[in-house]
Image 1: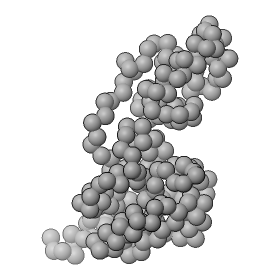
Image 2 (image 1 turned 90 degrees about the horizontal axis):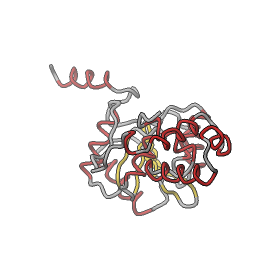
Image 3 (image 1 turned 120 degrees about the vertical axis):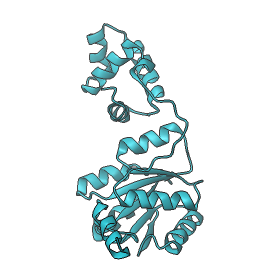
Image 4 (image 1 turned 120 degrees about the horizontal axis):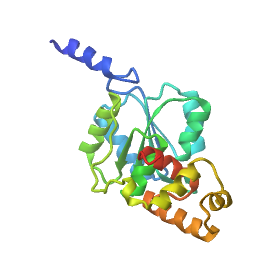
Length: 220
């Protein structure tokens, strides 16, 4: 197979219809030094024909509305004054199926799981080197997921008590605490205690995240 034929075969694998270099990458981050560094790598390695940067979710939405041909978004998990993951709901509302990789200075289990549950196609720690960035872009460009092999213990139903699983199931059905109390004949304090334990196990902070993460892990 000659070089041109090999390139065409690779192109056929790309879910976005792009071949490297990607048509356009948008970086959503509010740290100028990091932006400078990652932009330089993307350009030096010829991974994207165009690299754009914005510092907020609102600016990202405006940018993507006007440039829907964007191939990939690199999204900071913790933007100043807002949650980076809120971009996913915005993209869903405007109907833009753009691949998003979450980038973060945090490498904990909760951050990785939150990114996966939100719909990110990958997670890249900001501490990652040039080689990891290259691998990430290459894998994501052909429709693969890219998540770090971090030493996180897998969560199975055995990590939750039978009662906690009952509470979780009713929570997923949309029942408020008082209805869960009535269904399981528990006090409201006991239900809140179970919910707190479930949130801790799943690494989430609210009911919506809890249900999404539980479904992602196959607990529901």
